[in-house]
Structures are given as C-alpha cells and as structure tokens.
Image (tube, rainbow, N blue to C red; front, side, top):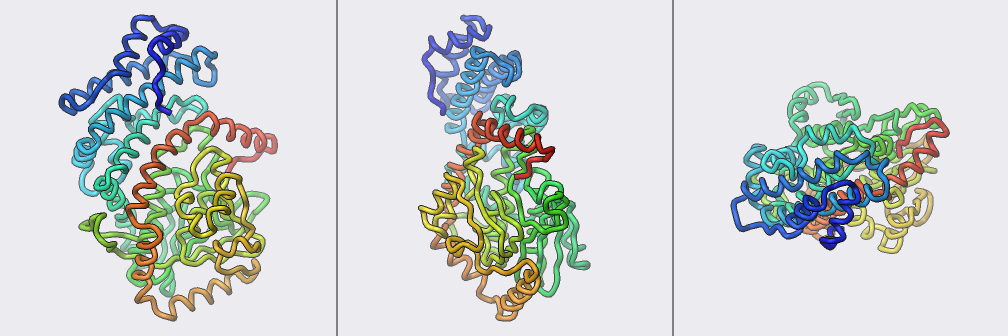
Length: 476
C-alpha cells in the first residue's frame, strides 16, 4: 500500500491537478528520500510535519474527494500514499522515543486516546489532533483523505514493539475514570444507567445490558465508553461472581419490544464519517479484553504470568449477534441462545476486519468454517449443527429467562474459587498475550486502510441506498 511512485510519474500527476512542476518535484523528492534518525526527534518531527502539512494543504485545495476528476483523484491518492510512507519511516525510527514522550505528556497509565493526542502535540502535522479529527468528521466517509491513516501507522508501530505493546494492553485494562466515580453508587444501589448501557447487580450476578434501541443495539463511538464502563462496574463489585451480557428491547418496528443482542458496528455513523478509527483499537483493548482477561494491577508487566481480577461471562443471544456482537461471543465462557437466532461476521463483505475474530474464530470452528464466515459471509443459525462450537445451549424464546436462571444457579452454586485460574490457564495455551499483541500490530495497520478504503465506501453506499429506499437507518 505504501509503494513509491517514480519521481517523473508522480510529478506529472501532481501537475495534472494544477500544482507547479518545480514545487511538485521538489516536494516529492524530499518526501521520498527523507531519511530519519540522524538528528534529534524534535528537529525531524518538524521537518516531517512540514512535508505532511504541505500535502494536506494541497489536498484541501482540491475539490471534495467524491467530486474530483480523474487527474485530481490520482493526485490526491498520490499525496495520501506518499505522506503515509513518510509517516511510516518516521514512526518506525522514533517509535520508542515517541511513546515515552507521549506517555509522559498523557500521565500515568494513559489510555490510547490520550496517547494519540499527546503524539499529535509532539508531532503536529504528522499525527492528527482531536480538533483536526473533529473537522474531518464533518465530511462523509467517501470524502475523507486519510487523516486517520497516520494514527494506524503510529499504533501499528507501537504494537510491534513487545514492551510498548504490552504497556498499552496493561493501561487499557484499568477501570475507566467514570467507573471509579460510579463504583460507590453501584455498591449501594446495585444499579447504574449509563444511557447506552445498564448494569444490574443481584445475587452475585452482574448483568450488562446493551441499550441502543434505535439502532438495534449497534456499537459506535457513543456506546463504547458506556459499555466498557458497565463491564468495569461489574468487575469492580466485590460480590459479583459471574457476569452476563444481554441486549435491551429495541424500538425498530420489525422487532419492537424484543430483546436483541447486538447488530454490530453502526453503519449509519460509519457512512456519515462520524465513526472514528480509534474505536476499533480501544474496543479490542478495553471492552473486549476486559471481558476476556479482566482487570490487571498497575504493577503488572506483560512479560510476566498474568495477574488480575476476572470473572466468567455468560452471553444471552436473542434475535442475532451480528459483527461485533458475534465477536463478543468468542470471549464468553458460556452462550445461551434462543432458538431461531443467528450469528454472522459481515465485516469482510462491508470492507473491514472483524476485530479479533480472525484470531479467535478458527480455534472454535476450525479454519475452514472460520474462513467461510469471515471471507464469504457464512451465517451460523444457532440451531444448526455447525453452531455447536459457538453456542452452549439453545432454548425457546419463552424459556430464556428460566434457562438463564438455571444456568446462573449452576455456576454460582458450585463455587468459583478456581474459575479465574482456569480462565488464565486456558488463555495461556490458546492465546498468550504476545500472540494478542502481535495480532493487534497487524490489525492496527490493516484496519486503518480498510476504514478509509474506496471499497468500504462502495459497500456502505450499496447498503445505504437499499435501506434509504425503505426509509430505514443502517444499523448493521
């Protein structure tokens, strides 16, 4: 994706979009031949940032991406590709120093969002700031010129370093500030309403309800922090022995009043350009990893055996678990599903990578079925034999409550002294932390390009138009 074009051909493309031959040739030569590591970080960040900012200014001078003619489109693609390559070389050279300085600015145990913003302060022009991304979010996805690619490059490089990657994993396993604020209230009341998620604590069970009824309990930037905080509150409660994930009733006419587990990423926000790239990373290291590995202490280091607090989790699948909802089932200890429900991973068809499903699904279903699900949109009806590796128990819709109660009684009544130890031991064999870190490095890089790819836009517009004709939103 970052292959360089020849100098003459690149200059011709830039000139075709209205740039002067001399300035185009000079910029391209400097962008392609710049070598890093021979001076101080601040000096090289300034020089790299200047080149990136020049390219962005030229991009802003072009029409919106969807309105460009062929020459303008080729010139815009060239500028995005060459600045991404420049950013890659700079980040690869300075990744450790960048992390140390970004962490110093962001404070103790910073989340990924804070690290990204600190990096933008250290290297303006190279990595986008929150303010720049807010402006970018005013554009439809089809009109974006790849500002978030540089975030993907940054985090891919940080994950590629074993020490830095493990530090990010550790930091993201701490409770959110909001969870710590609400902890005392939940201890008193056993309840928390976080708008897009709810928590109920009762008889040693902590239940997290996904609550985005307008969009069939879809996930997006607005729901992620409430959902992660809800999981934190369950993990922080000293009396909780087991956690439950479940969807709240939705308001869509087709399913009105019915509980649905999750319809995956919110395609409406994705199409409109308001869905961030960082969502993909913070979701995996925050919400999903806390379900899979729980909390860890601030003193824990990645190269050690796992330490921390975790509990077993049960998912109740009603209706469907699509995309991100299906991904969550891969880190559950038990899945109870209503008969007639189905699971699927349509991310490849849409144009993105389905989180860590590529890492986890093959060991549950086998590689052949996993490939069919991920690459060819195979569905898994829960009643079908091939779903037995994904679902533990199936019952009728009317029996879900009774079966859930029996399941919880069985789990909590038999004692859970060894549950955490057994979970850690299972993970040690099937997904060591280093395997997870290595996967996240590749995922961070690939997802950045997928998130901004023309293919994703084409797929979303196909879905958008088909639903728009029916006057529906795109939740899945």
